[in-house]
Structures are given as C-alpha cells and as structure tokens.
Image 1 (cartoon, rainbow, N blue to C red):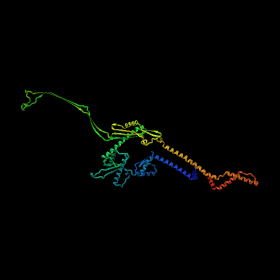
Image 2 (image 1 turned 90 degrees about the horizontal axis):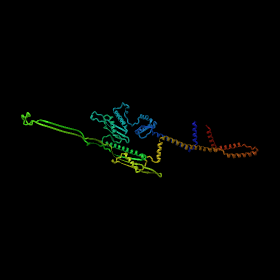
Image 3 (image 1 turned 135 degrees about the horizontal axis):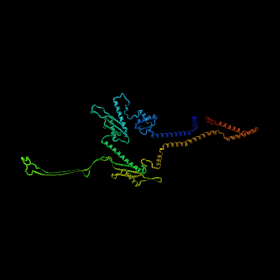
Image 4 (image 1 turned 90 degrees about the vertical axis):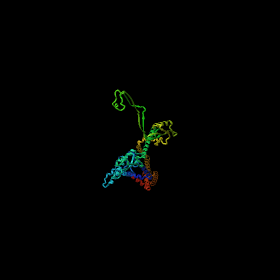
Length: 557
C-alpha cells in the first residue's frame, strides 16, 4: 500500500474544501474523539470501583498520603482514593508496591518499634540508647493496641523515673494512653482492663493502677470512681435498650411486610421501659406438715427391800450397825419409771433470689401502615385500611412483642397515606416499578449493554452524519468542477449556425470563381470547431491551464 500517495490524496482533498466544510469535518472528528475518550474514562473509573483494587495503606495522615500518591504518579501506578486516608491499587500489585513504598521510608509518620535497633550506632550514649528503647517500646505497644477492632489509633507515653539506691525514694513507673475510637464503637470494661494489663506487663514494676487511659474526647476510661462506673453502666444500658427495641421493630416489619405489600409500607417504633436495678433477696419457707424425726422411750422398775439407814445419837450403837431384835430393821421398796420422748422435724426451704438485671416494666409500640390505592379518572385515590384490618394487624403486633396487659403494655396501629413509598424512598408509580424490574433483570448484562449502546450510537452517527456529509462533499466537488468545464465547452447550436453560414458563403465564393461546389462537411466542421476552441482558449487561459493540470495529476500514477 502506497501511504505517500494516500497522504497526498488526503491533502489534495482537504485543499479543495472551503472553510465551512473544513470546520464541519474538524468538529466531527473532535466530537468522535471526545465521545471515545469519555467512554474509555468512564469504563476505567467503573472498573476501578470493582473488585480489581485492594487496600495499599489505610489510616494515613495527609502528609504521608501526599507522598505516596506522588510516588505512584511518578511510577505510573494506577490507584484510587475511596476515602480520606485510604489508598487502593490493583490487587496483583499490592504486595510489590507496598514493599517499594516501604523501602522509601513511607509512611513516615507511622509508629516505629524495635526496628530502631536494626542499625547500630557506636557513638550513641547510654542516655540515647535508653530513649531509643523507650520509643521502640511505646511503638510496639501502640501497634498492639491498634489491632483491637474498636481502636482506630493510639498514643502511648511511658514515664520511667530515675532509680534511687534508697528504697523509700523509689518512684514506680507510670503510663498514659490516648485512644482514638472508631465511629459508633466503644470499649467494654474488660477490654479497658485488658489494655491496662497489657501495658503493665510490658514495663517492669508498672502496675495496672498506674496506667491512665483517655479517649479522643478526654473522657477517662477504666477508672473505678463512682462517676465513671455510672457512665459506663448507663452506656451499656442504653445500648442494650436500643438493641432490643430494634429487634422488636424488625420482627414487626418482617411479619407485616408480606401482608401489606412490602417493608416500604410499614413503619414501626417500639419503646421498652427497663428496670436495671439489681435486687438480691433471701427467703426461708417452712413446711406446715411435720415429719417424725426421732422417738425415745425410757422404762425404769425396781422392787425389793433395802437396809434401813443407820441413824440416831452418835455412840456405840450407831457405829456398830443394826442390831437384831430391833423393830423395822428392813424396808420393802418398789420403784417404777416410764418416759417417752418424740422429736418432730419442721421442713424448711431457703432460697437466695437474684432478680435479673434488666426487667421489662412496660412495652409501647406504634405502627403506621399504608393503605390501599385505586385509580379514579387518572388520579390515584388513597383508601385507609378498615377497622377489621387494623384490628388484625394489632393482634399480630401484640403477639409479636409479647403483649402483657398486667404490665401496662400498649399498642397503637394507624393507617395513613405515605408521602414516599417507604423508608427507602423507592417509587410506587408504575414507571418506577417498571424501572426496578428492568434493573433487576438487566443488571447482570450491564457491561454488554453498555458496549452495545456504544456500537449503536456509532452506527447511527456514521449513517446519519458521516455518510450524508461524504455524499454532500462529492456533490460540492462536482459543482465546483462543472463551471470550469462549462466555460471550455462549445455550444453545439452556435457551431452549427456558424457552420451553415460559412458553408453558404463558401458556396457563393466557389460559384463566383467557377470552382466545383463539392464541400467536405467534416473538414469544415473541424475547422470551425478548432477556431472556436482556439478563441475560447485565448479568452480563458487560466481556467484551461487548471483543467490541464488536474488531468495530468489524474493520469499520473
């Protein structure tokens, strides 16, 4: 293919165009390039937001992010910044780019740990080594604390006092921690105590009581004073209350949405009054039915006589005992004893009762549902739900939340026309529903449709713009060349009339001279035509030269 000839033809074609035609061609080319550039950029930006990119760094400070972006631009590495402090690059290049960026010492404002000791310095003093060790220890603790989900960033400061040889003058080390918590996240008391124990275990002679923690708002965390404990308890109670209320609201919406036509046609709000007071009680219960525990019976019996006791005036007779022959020297004895003992056991029950921490005092629920709609004369008319429908919905809500009339629970159900079609604001018109259905079915073919629409637009542009413009350009060219040819053409009628006149004059002259009257008509026509062309060429020399030049160019290979 002779590109030089093609290029010359293009230049010749462009030179033959007037200013208006050149402007039209230039505008068309610019429009096509702009359209293709827009589609390429749109396709690139849409692909970047898909799964082709992964996080390179996050939680970056502005100065570090600017340096990393400057390096990526220099190396022509594609990247996206979905949010402040986050930079993403293609997945297949994350590890390599991260190592390259780290080799340049970026990010600079990040925490440093024991990598400070990777380079030995023989000129460092003992004081400098201690400061370096303290910085490394603080950096390692910050990295460890930042691994907790609720912590976005942290700053640890450790104060190690100078050691003294006197025990009474020794001061224990202390530590202070600043925590920047993530949005809508808090630390539990166990997590706070765990951070204290973590720091205390890393520093010799540091106790958890000497570790002070504050959040980004300056609120102390983990203190055992009554005010801090009350605040922590109040936060926990509010979180628990909101969580339970949200759970009941979701239950109400899930059970009513299939009935009324979707979750966008119902709004439910639940309020639960809790009693968070903790009560410990002890109860002793006695059983009225006695149980025989033990029974004891004692029987004693004694019969016979016993010697009479010796008595009287001290003397010989009383010392020698009873003397025979005295009266009543023997006494007859009979002894009987019976004793019964019965023990009964009283059954008792001892209960240590610890009431639950969160007791429900009362539940109130308010439910608003959309009604029915019908078309009247092209207008949509709202019809509220009937009393029977509202009563049925109320029964469902009561069973869902565990309604208890003794507790004073209440449920309110109303039917109103929604300004929007629901909480998510989706359209309820026919057009909106049709668009939703189209997006559901055609969503997987989005990329194919995009290129198909592009091909259709280009085809229409070619048929409606390029093709008519080309035809018009050819017509213009013929119109421009036509007057030139017209000027050099000879009028046939004029030639014929001239030929007749010359023929008559020539016949008259020949008759007068007595010459034969035979005249060659072809030679006469040729002579007349040659005369007319010569005269026309003399009058229009420039146009004849231009026509000859164009003929030579067309004939040349």
